[in-house]
Amino acid sequence: MKIGIDEMAFATTDQYIDLRELAKRRGDEPDKYTIGIGQDQQAVVPPTQDIVTLGAAAAEKLLNPTNIKNISTIIVATESGIDNSKASAIYIKHLLGLNDFVRTVELKEACYSGTAAIQFARGLVALNPQETVLVIAADIARYGLNTPGEVTQGAGAVAMLIGANPHVLAIEPTAVSYSKDIMDFWRPLYATEAMVDGKYSTNVYIDFFLQTFTRYQQLTGRKLEDFAGLAFHLPFTKMGKKALEALLGQRTDPTAQRMRKQLTAEQAYCRQVGNLYTGSLYLGLMSMLQNGRIQAGDRLGLFSYGSGAEGEFYTGIVQAGFATYLNDIQADLDARHQVSIDEYERLFNAQLGMNSADQQFDLAGDQLPFVLAGQRDHQRIYQRNQ
Ligand code: CAA
Image (cartoon, rainbow, N blue to C red; front, top):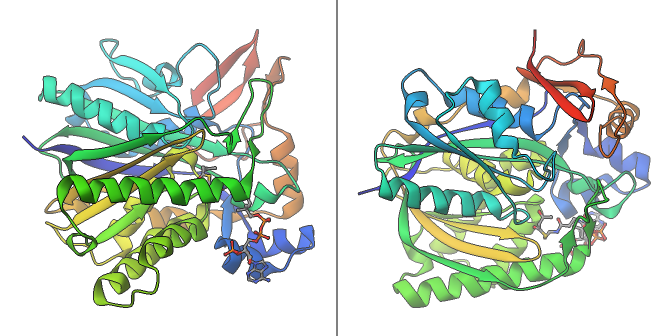
C-alpha cells in the first residue's frame, strides 16, 4: 500500500520587507543578503498572528467536506510553541471546527519535527488505512533585531494530509535518521529569540546531510542519478547550495546540472518568505513541484535537518496529477504588501512573547482568516477574523 503526502497547502502573513532595505539599515551590502545569504524578502509577523493562526490558515486551504471526515489525528510540529503544556493542535482543531473525536498533539525537535510528524503519521495510516493524519509544520523564526541571524528570519505554516494512495508523494520505506547532542541552535525556556552558533550550525548541517545520504546509498544501492531532484531544509537558500555543492564537488555532468536546476526551483519561495523552521523543507518541496520540471514517477530525495541536532534523508515518488493538490503559492505571495523597516521593527517588538499582562490587539489591519485577538487571564484568545 502506498502511503504519503496526499495534499499540501502553505500560508504565511500578508506583509513582507525587502531585504535590500534591511541591509542598508544595518550597514551591510545588499548583495550580502541577496547573493551571499540568498534571501530577497522576509515575512513580517504582526502580533495578531502566530503558529496557531498560520497553521489553521494553511490547513483550511486544503480541507473540504469530504477529506475533513477522515482526519483521525492532528500533529503540529513546531519550535515556536505558544504554551509549555497545551498543544497548539487543540486550538487549531477548534478554529477549524473539526469534531472532538480527533487526536491532537504537538511535536518538537527544532526544524526536524515536521519530518518526524510525517513518519509517525505513516505508521498510523499503515495501522488504519482509512484514516488521514493532518500534519502542520508551523513556525516563526526569530533571531532578534540587528543580529547576524536577522536576515534568516521568516514565518509560515505548511499543512499536509498524510494518507493511503496519496496524490502528491508516495513515501518510500527507507529513511536514514542521524542524531547527536550538539549546541548549534537552541532557545531556552526564558527566551523568545533563538540562540545560535551560526557558522558551526552550517557545518553540522552539511555533515549530517553527507552522513545520511551516504548511508542511504549504502542501504539501497541507489545513486544520485536515480533522483530527479533533492529537496533540502532551507533556513536560507544558500544553505541548500552549500550542502548540494559539498556532495557534487566539481561535477558538471547532466545529473549534477539537473540537481542544481532543481535546487533553484526549490529555493524560489524561500527567497520570498525566509525560514519557516519546521516547514522550510516542505515549502521547498512545494516550490520544486511547482517551479521545477517534475513529472509523475520522478523520485525526489528530502533532507530534513533540525539543530540540536537531528537529520533525516528519505525519498518519495511523485504521483500523477500532483499539481492540483497544492495551493497557488506564488499568487498568495504576490498579493502581500511591503512594509517599511520601521514598521517591521515596531511589529517585531509588539509580539505577545513572554508578556503575562492582559492585552487586546487592534485587529483592523489583519486580513488573514484567523487572528490572535489578545490575552486574558493568561489565556490566548483566538478567533476567526470578522
Ligand atoms: N556580496 C556577495 N556575497 C557576500 C557579500 C557581498 N557583498 N558579503 C558577504 N557575502 C557572503 C559571504 O562570503 C558569505 O558567503 P559564504 O557563506 O558562501 O562564505 C555569506 O555572504 C554570509 O556572510 P557571513 O558569513 O559574513 O555572514 P554572517 O556572519 O552575518 O552569518 C549566518 C551568516 C551564519 C548564516 C547567519 O545569518 C546565521 O547565524 N543564521 C542563522 C543560523 C542558520 O540558519 N544556520 C543554518 C544551519 S542550522 C539550521 O538549518 C536550523 C535552522 O533552521 C536554524
